[in-house]
Length: 395
Image (cartoon, rainbow, N blue to C red; front, side):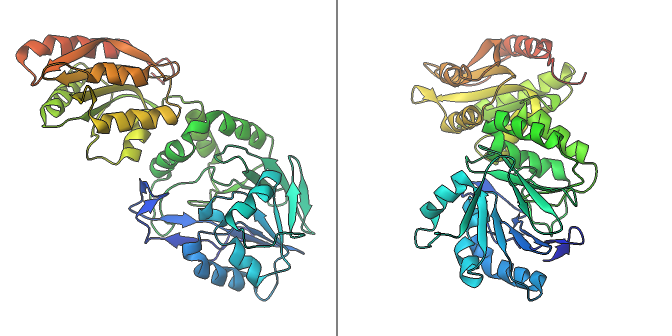
C-alpha cells in the first residue's frame, strides 16, 4: 500500500498476513507490517527495505511511488532480515543507489549479503551525521542495542519526522485496526525488553528534537498524542510496572497445581486486590504472559515439581523473564510435590537473578493436592503479597 505521510514522504510498506510466527517464536494472529518509506526531495531516499518474503510487492510499491524517478540513497537503519532482507534485490534494480548506514551496519552487511559487491556503494555515518536531500536534511542518531548493535534512527528536520527503526513498533498488520498499546507492549518486552538502558538513551536524544510524526518499522505511523506513546516507552524502558496488579502464572501437570493457583487468585480478589490475572503456562502464548509480567506490579508463580527441578513450562517462563531483564517486582512462590518438592527451590534459583525483585514470604508448599489445611498458608501469602505495596504504581 502507498500512503502519504507528508507531501514529500510516502509510506510504501507491506502487510504480511501469511506469517504464523514472527522471528519463529511470537504468535501474530493479525500478521505484521514491514514498514518502508520514500522521501521525494531533490534527491530521493528510501528508508529501509522489507522482509524478502514480501519483496516483490514492496518493489512494486516503490516503483509506483517513484513515478519514474531513480532513488539516490537507501537508508538502512536496522540490518535485521525483516527490514533489510531485500537489499540485494533493490540494488539489482537500482545499481547506482548508495547505501547510507551506521559504520557497524556497513561492516555487518556482507555477513548477510556475501555475494554482493558493496565496494564504493556505502556511506557510513556516525552520531550527529547528516545527509542533504536538497530541500531537507536527514540527521542521524546512533541507537546501539535497540535492539541490535548497528541500529540508528533518522530525523527529517523539515517535516519533523522521526524514523524510529524498531522503536514504537507493534505486532499486527496495518489492515487490522486495533488499540495500539496491547500489541506494542507485547512487541516491546519480547523484542526490546532486555535493552531498557539503550532505549532510555535514545529517548533522551529524541527529547531534544521537535517531533510531529514517528515512523516505525512495524505498526502504524504515529501522528497524534505522541506524549502518550513516548510516556509508555519511558515507563517500559525503566522497567516500572504499568499497573498495580497480580499475575498468577502456573504450570500444572495433572491439574492439581492449577486448582491451587485459581484458588489463590480468588483469595486475592476477596481481599481486595485491584487486578488479578491468571495464566496457564502450558497453554497461553508465552509472549503474552511475559508482557503481563512486565505490565503488573506483582507476580505469583505456582508450579509442580518435576525431575528434582520444576515443570518445564515454568522454567521456560522464568528463563524468558531473566533474559529480558525482569526486575522491580514483588514475587510469591507456590510449589507442589508428592514426595520431595523441588519446584520452589528451582524457581527461586532463577528469581534470585532478577534485580531489585523480592520474594514475598512464605513459600507455600502443597503436597499433591490442595487440602483445607493448606488454606491458612495461602491466606497468609495473599496478605503478604497485598502488603508488599508497589511504590512505583499510581495509587
